[in-house]
Image (cartoon, rainbow, N blue to C red; front, side):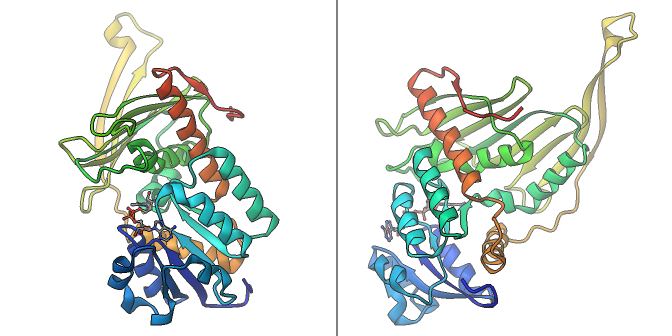
Length: 345
Ligand SMILES: NC(=O)c1ccc[n+]([C@@H]2O[C@H](COP(=O)([O-])OP(=O)(O)OC[C@H]3O[C@@H](n4cnc5c(N)ncnc54)[C@H](O)[C@@H]3O)[C@@H](O)[C@H]2O)c1
């Protein structure tokens, strides 16, 4: 796209449950023009018809690829279709945003990253939580050392909700939590182990427990489930100085910082003196929480205009897919740890 051009022409492909939110956002942002909506399902398209010109509502993806005025394509179809749609968009010279999971195999991710590089196209993956103001706040706290050394992070994404047939709970739910844990720690895990069960449909795990080991120092744990009595969206961070709990279902006080910890006193006579428990204050930082999806859409537009690399770029997508792939392998081996290549120390 011409860097001097102000308004970015966007086409959204897949305007179902989630894609309609993306289409709505791009139709509302002044610096964007929602030029197309595309879906295989006519009834789904009709619900969003007021958002675009009638001639730009289509079931034919090729129309988007062939339109020279279209700058970027936003892909919000089901995960297994992402690779092919993304490849076609990049080959047609479009900047691309693709929902999580980026693709279903790390080799596909690598190929798309290379293609985007060769064609100097923006490639962004929809790791929404990386644009959440609470996560941005936590990232800064960790960088400033306010939580101390991060010992472990665990995330719970549970409910009795939509049961998918084309992806298991891990590929559907866990990309958010994996991307956040990698983002907050700034590290790649050295190995992954995963256990899960398919209680509802054969071969499609609905409950998964995933553990990421970061060089035998920090640990990351993700519990995802479609079969749980409680709707839960929580991330807990345990640092050597402080602990933090992000509860995304809280309407306003989403982040609590606990000044709690264990201090070891080397100059001791009794065990009670050696292990000192610290129970300090609980603080609730004031964080203005706008719609993270709006922030994510604005970021994509800004990267398109400035030809910049998105925070959740193809490499970020690759790292998450690599973890998911290793988790699948571990799952098939009864939870044996699976090493990840090139983990940073
Ligand atoms: N970021 C988030 O918080 C979040 C939340 C929910 C879903 N998602 C992601 O969004 C994507 C879509 O999920 P959903 O819940 O909206 O699914 P959905 O099934 O409700 O919608 C998918 C839509 O894509 C359409 N579609 C499928 N293949 C197509 C093709 N080749 N061309 C055109 N249209 C096609 C379907 O007709 C359907 O309307 C998934 O990747 C999912 O993981 C992200």
